[in-house]
Image 1 (cartoon, rainbow, N blue to C red):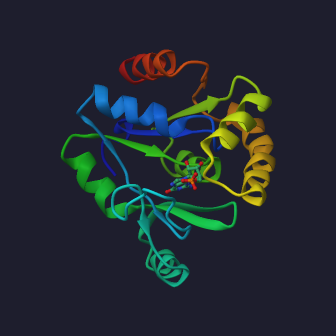
Image 2 (cartoon, rainbow, N blue to C red):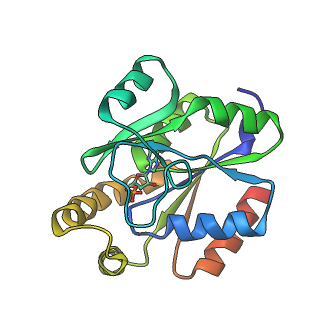
Image 3 (tube, rainbow, N blue to C red):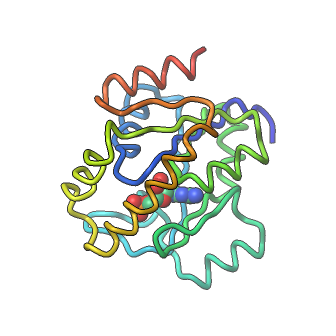
Length: 184
Ligand code: 5GP
């Protein structure tokens, strides 16, 4: 794949605010394109197929793995998530900066395959704050919240493996920090 510096990974634990930061990045710079992932989890209220995710069955996901149609994929809290390869290629070739908003295992896979990709890990201000954010989001049941929180400990321990680490105290500050990294 050409121009790999144009591949930017935003990773970090569930609830850290990746989605909000990414939305601001997209609003402020139209050369950035966000990859839409495929997932086997059920849509949350208000989520749309082809907009938030491609919501697909386990069978279809496994078929895509077999056909090597993912740039990376991982299991997270009982579901599969993956980045479809074909559109990422096309967008990079068209000159876009391609942004991936993914969990830590997938981010590590990309760093191994494409060391030139830029990876940014978002840390929560504290674990208590992370729990508060996941609970306030109100999108998960207790069991799913607990899965995400126990996974967060492991994910935070991996933060040192990425190129940059930003603590997400404030969305505006974090977005400015990301732009500084991308432009440097
Ligand atoms: P959620 O269920 O909250 O939408 O996502 C759960 C986790 O999966 C989040 O950390 C999110 O960033 C991550 N994720 C979303 N899409 C992908 C993907 O394509 N690949 C990987 N590895 N993780 C993803």
